[in-house]
Image (cartoon, rainbow, N blue to C red):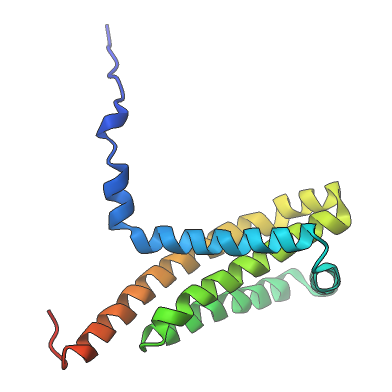
Length: 168
Protein backbone atom coordinates (compact mmCIF):
# COMPACT_ATOMS: atom_id res chain seq x y z
CA UNK A 1 0.00 0.00 0.00
CA UNK A 2 1.33 3.39 -1.02
CA UNK A 3 1.53 6.10 1.61
CA UNK A 4 1.56 9.80 1.01
CA UNK A 5 3.61 12.39 2.78
CA UNK A 6 2.28 15.35 4.65
CA UNK A 7 3.13 18.77 3.27
CA UNK A 8 4.47 21.01 6.00
CA UNK A 9 4.10 24.70 5.34
CA UNK A 10 6.92 25.34 7.77
CA UNK A 11 9.38 23.95 5.23
CA UNK A 12 8.54 26.70 2.75
CA UNK A 13 10.99 29.51 3.28
CA UNK A 14 8.83 32.38 2.05
CA UNK A 15 10.80 35.18 3.65
CA UNK A 16 14.10 33.84 2.33
CA UNK A 17 12.63 33.55 -1.17
CA UNK A 18 11.27 37.10 -1.03
CA UNK A 19 14.59 38.40 0.28
CA UNK A 20 16.51 36.59 -2.48
CA UNK A 21 14.18 37.98 -5.17
CA UNK A 22 13.48 41.38 -3.63
CA UNK A 23 13.81 43.39 -6.84
CA UNK A 24 11.36 41.11 -8.66
CA UNK A 25 8.86 41.42 -5.81
CA UNK A 26 9.27 45.21 -5.72
CA UNK A 27 8.78 45.54 -9.48
CA UNK A 28 5.67 43.39 -9.23
CA UNK A 29 4.35 45.74 -6.56
CA UNK A 30 5.26 48.81 -8.67
CA UNK A 31 3.41 47.35 -11.67
CA UNK A 32 0.41 46.49 -9.49
CA UNK A 33 0.44 50.00 -8.04
CA UNK A 34 0.30 51.44 -11.56
CA UNK A 35 -2.66 49.20 -12.41
CA UNK A 36 -4.46 50.14 -9.17
CA UNK A 37 -3.95 53.87 -9.69
CA UNK A 38 -5.37 53.67 -13.21
CA UNK A 39 -8.31 51.59 -11.90
CA UNK A 40 -9.04 54.23 -9.27
CA UNK A 41 -8.77 57.06 -11.80
CA UNK A 42 -11.06 55.31 -14.28
CA UNK A 43 -13.59 54.41 -11.57
CA UNK A 44 -13.67 58.02 -10.30
CA UNK A 45 -14.28 59.16 -13.91
CA UNK A 46 -11.09 61.23 -13.91
CA UNK A 47 -9.80 59.71 -17.12
CA UNK A 48 -12.93 59.11 -19.15
CA UNK A 49 -11.80 61.15 -22.16
CA UNK A 50 -8.28 59.67 -22.14
CA UNK A 51 -9.58 56.15 -21.67
CA UNK A 52 -12.08 56.55 -24.52
CA UNK A 53 -9.28 57.87 -26.75
CA UNK A 54 -7.09 54.85 -25.92
CA UNK A 55 -9.99 52.46 -26.50
CA UNK A 56 -10.98 54.06 -29.81
CA UNK A 57 -7.38 53.78 -30.96
CA UNK A 58 -7.22 50.17 -29.72
CA UNK A 59 -10.46 49.14 -31.45
CA UNK A 60 -9.57 50.90 -34.70
CA UNK A 61 -6.08 49.43 -34.60
CA UNK A 62 -7.27 45.86 -34.04
CA UNK A 63 -9.97 45.95 -36.70
CA UNK A 64 -8.28 47.88 -39.51
CA UNK A 65 -5.04 45.90 -39.87
CA UNK A 66 -4.23 42.28 -40.61
CA UNK A 67 -3.32 39.89 -37.81
CA UNK A 68 0.37 39.76 -38.75
CA UNK A 69 0.67 43.55 -38.86
CA UNK A 70 -1.10 43.92 -35.50
CA UNK A 71 1.14 41.25 -33.99
CA UNK A 72 4.27 42.97 -35.31
CA UNK A 73 3.25 46.43 -34.08
CA UNK A 74 2.30 45.12 -30.62
CA UNK A 75 5.62 43.28 -30.48
CA UNK A 76 7.46 46.52 -31.29
CA UNK A 77 5.39 48.38 -28.65
CA UNK A 78 6.31 45.83 -25.98
CA UNK A 79 9.92 45.70 -27.12
CA UNK A 80 10.32 49.45 -26.66
CA UNK A 81 9.73 49.12 -22.90
CA UNK A 82 12.37 46.40 -22.63
CA UNK A 83 14.71 48.40 -24.89
CA UNK A 84 14.43 51.47 -22.64
CA UNK A 85 15.08 49.30 -19.60
CA UNK A 86 18.21 48.02 -21.34
CA UNK A 87 19.36 51.55 -22.20
CA UNK A 88 18.78 52.87 -18.68
CA UNK A 89 20.35 49.82 -17.05
CA UNK A 90 23.68 50.69 -18.66
CA UNK A 91 23.81 53.99 -16.79
CA UNK A 92 23.34 55.39 -13.32
CA UNK A 93 19.94 56.76 -14.35
CA UNK A 94 18.55 53.24 -14.38
CA UNK A 95 18.09 53.26 -10.62
CA UNK A 96 15.51 56.05 -10.99
CA UNK A 97 14.01 55.39 -14.42
CA UNK A 98 13.56 51.62 -14.50
CA UNK A 99 10.86 51.65 -11.78
CA UNK A 100 9.18 54.54 -13.61
CA UNK A 101 9.05 52.49 -16.82
CA UNK A 102 7.47 49.54 -15.00
CA UNK A 103 4.96 51.89 -13.31
CA UNK A 104 4.07 53.46 -16.66
CA UNK A 105 3.49 50.02 -18.20
CA UNK A 106 1.22 49.14 -15.28
CA UNK A 107 -0.75 52.35 -15.78
CA UNK A 108 -1.19 51.65 -19.50
CA UNK A 109 -2.34 48.10 -18.79
CA UNK A 110 -4.80 49.30 -16.17
CA UNK A 111 -6.21 51.95 -18.48
CA UNK A 112 -6.80 49.40 -21.23
CA UNK A 113 -8.32 46.77 -18.96
CA UNK A 114 -10.60 49.14 -17.02
CA UNK A 115 -11.42 51.27 -20.03
CA UNK A 116 -12.69 48.24 -21.94
CA UNK A 117 -14.85 47.24 -19.01
CA UNK A 118 -16.20 50.74 -18.37
CA UNK A 119 -17.17 51.37 -22.00
CA UNK A 120 -18.21 47.92 -23.18
CA UNK A 121 -19.43 46.15 -20.01
CA UNK A 122 -19.50 42.36 -20.25
CA UNK A 123 -18.24 42.44 -23.82
CA UNK A 124 -15.20 44.32 -22.53
CA UNK A 125 -14.56 41.60 -19.96
CA UNK A 126 -14.66 38.91 -22.62
CA UNK A 127 -12.39 40.98 -24.87
CA UNK A 128 -9.99 41.39 -21.95
CA UNK A 129 -9.95 37.65 -21.27
CA UNK A 130 -9.44 36.69 -24.89
CA UNK A 131 -7.02 39.29 -26.23
CA UNK A 132 -5.40 41.50 -23.63
CA UNK A 133 -4.75 39.39 -20.55
CA UNK A 134 -2.81 36.49 -22.17
CA UNK A 135 -0.41 38.76 -24.02
CA UNK A 136 -0.13 41.15 -21.09
CA UNK A 137 0.83 38.37 -18.69
CA UNK A 138 3.65 37.17 -20.94
CA UNK A 139 4.89 40.69 -21.64
CA UNK A 140 4.75 41.80 -18.02
CA UNK A 141 6.68 38.73 -16.85
CA UNK A 142 9.45 39.53 -19.33
CA UNK A 143 9.33 43.22 -18.42
CA UNK A 144 9.65 42.53 -14.69
CA UNK A 145 12.48 40.08 -15.29
CA UNK A 146 14.33 42.57 -17.49
CA UNK A 147 13.72 45.37 -14.99
CA UNK A 148 15.03 43.27 -12.13
CA UNK A 149 18.25 42.36 -13.93
CA UNK A 150 18.60 45.88 -15.31
CA UNK A 151 18.32 47.47 -11.88
CA UNK A 152 20.84 45.01 -10.48
CA UNK A 153 23.26 45.84 -13.29
CA UNK A 154 22.75 49.59 -12.86
CA UNK A 155 23.35 49.28 -9.12
CA UNK A 156 26.52 47.24 -9.69
CA UNK A 157 27.69 49.81 -12.22
CA UNK A 158 27.13 52.63 -9.72
CA UNK A 159 29.12 50.75 -7.07
CA UNK A 160 32.00 50.33 -9.52
CA UNK A 161 32.00 54.02 -10.39
CA UNK A 162 31.76 55.16 -6.79
CA UNK A 163 34.48 52.77 -5.58
CA UNK A 164 37.00 54.10 -8.13
CA UNK A 165 36.61 51.29 -10.62
CA UNK A 166 37.28 48.43 -8.17
CA UNK A 167 34.79 45.62 -8.46
CA UNK A 168 34.19 43.57 -5.29
